[in-house]
Image (cartoon, rainbow, N blue to C red):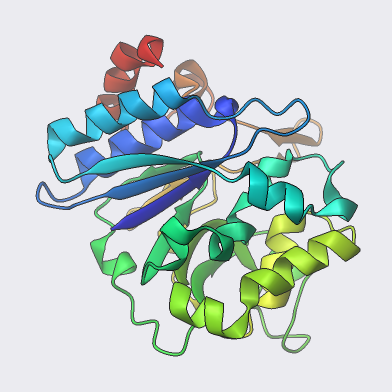
Length: 275
């Protein structure tokens, strides 16, 4: 399985937890080819080479065929700056997945599963990864909030996907120039959640998957496969945005009351100082 994370040094703890969840919840004979795209640009501190090396050694303990590769996308990124969205709430790294088509190590792959650094694998993902994508550019799950406000194929046609978990059929994406269209949008138009908006506007052939493959609520359901610790709106006692990430162990326990990931988080606690 080809797995992609994107970000700067700040995602290292989340990536460690996410990778541990893949290793512990997946099949023992599963092979993970994990890629981490990063960039060094105007104050952005790139994902550390030593951290990638440590993660590579870690995954090989589970299966010698596993690997973690760090990809420096600085040159590609600088040549194609998403100019209108460089000062958004999110760092430029949030848009790195839009440059997959320009990375030789990635654009030759058949498919790749992109995961945000705050996604935990709760159950084996093989069935999701093997989803039939014939004629489809990307598969994903509706955004639990955005689906009600953004529609690209008819007013009542819910099709706005959350970009935290996306399975890309790379040959189809390259054929349609989907990534190029998304980057062009980011160059020319300011957008709320630029990377997610650009992808949704640029993907013409999508496959909507069951919510269990990207559960964005604070607590997982019985059938949840991938649990995305995304921000959640809370209205009591006052309106606020609740932000709890998987590596914030005390918050996971005390605020979310979740303990089913304790085997993963205990392993994380042992390893985090090695990052």
